[in-house]
Length: 316
Image (cartoon, rainbow, N blue to C red; front, side, top):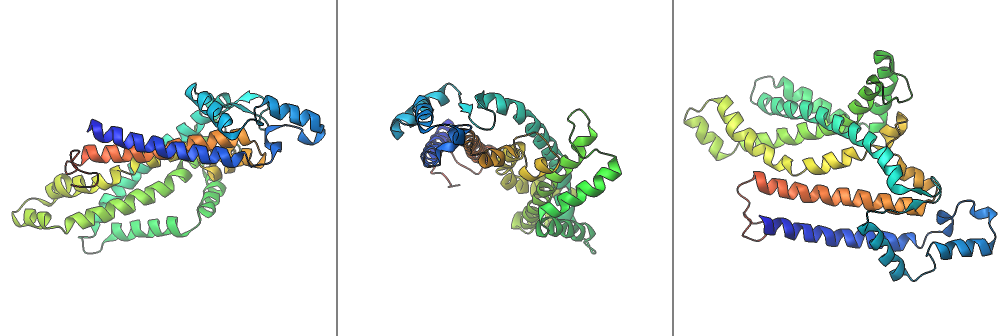
């Protein structure tokens, strides 16, 4: 297993290296205004002096080498336009905890609601009226068919009146967390319910389940110890990635409720043409995406005994 983890980790690091290098090179093609505040008010000599001091006149490979040296010290640089000469680490350290808290709460709600909903839908398919399956399918279709911006606005408009929540976000007021958490959780609720229901229905039609029923094993025992146990395995692979991405915050939800988190930060710094901040945030999101896939593969290999670590990857 250790060899498997090291191999996946090595591939992830190579992928991350290529992503960071390409983004770094592309940003060096962006206008120089993104590195200098009050660019229009400076003379050409002042602009040139600033660029030289920032090392932006060095060859690309020299700049890239310095950047990776900074990364080894966990230094993402400083912001040049968003907050002039303020450490990017400091900016992210302020905003990240808010998005992480929002993401963890929404994921908890999604798991608590989505997983039982998927189980009820799967069990309902074997009943006469299939009420839970119809209700769950209607909910999933609504969430996936209607643009998220529409039901986000509906939740905000009617939820603020129902809960007496102020329009502007206040982290110290627990009621201000209810609507953003609910909004951010809806997509994952539908996702978990849909896929768990699908996996459970697929498992219930397999021969080993039919054999267990023929032997007189109770339906609850089959559902708990066979169908649900095997249906959960494919979902495990996606949990770390969805958790990490949710913790990054939602651009629209955080903007809608004026939440000072990570969600809208990337859009904001792109608008301000703060290239150093864009570079740092792309790096962070790339790390999160790759880490989510890596953890998903490792977690699935741990929970699924059919995966062999001694054979080629993908063989069972």
